[in-house]
Length: 115
Image (tube, rainbow, N blue to C red):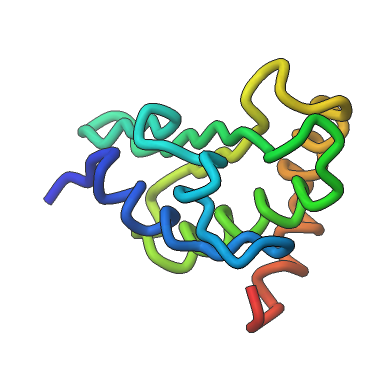
């Protein structure tokens, strides 16, 4: 069975924001339109773009890691997962995107059972 954007969105939509008593979907941090999925014979990838609540959000890296960890734990291992800041929505966009691609940081996040 192939996996589509709606299935992926269902996995991450109810993640709680670390600073607010709401989900990422409720806060507009992530939407179905920000989820891209390719699942065919040649490629299996998920690309998530998310919008922090404010341009200087100190929790943006944590939010991105939470989404990535949840997807890594929920999707088949064939998927390459990329989570990044929606372009132009955070003051430290490049630095945060670099952290979200850091394999050691992601491995440490995977070891954290609270994520």
